Length: 157
Image (cartoon, rainbow, N blue to C red; front, side, top):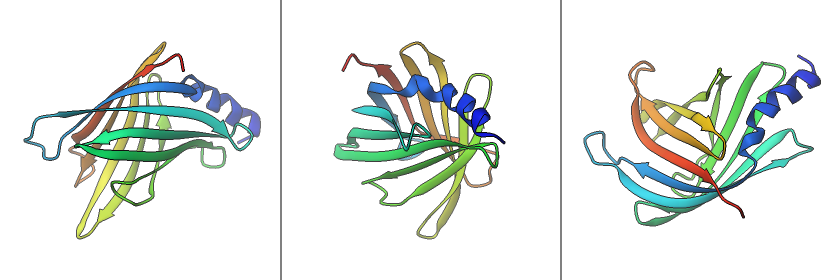
């Protein structure tokens, strides 16, 4: 796949560039209530505008929460790739997926101690100045449980 095609694909995520206020809800257990947390996020192009970097600063379950992610289109595989690291998990998560007509969905595999499970991350309900985000987990790759969800609203910063 050519660099020109990759550049066209990257235009699909250009809406993310900028500053965002984030209201994130988290479930510590599938039966628990959602717990709301607030934060802010900045998306900026790096590496000659080939990778979109996200920084996140906020709170998670009453503790400071810092994260950094990278989003890129792999012109060789034709897939979107996403990495994420934060101070809560202390691991490097790697996901891959596709940008559909209205959403970007990437999936990866996590191992934390004895547990191993799939993780699905989605950016959806994309509109001018706003989008929704969700992280879901699955033991079998078929039945998904929402663990984190967020609403991002663009700021004037």
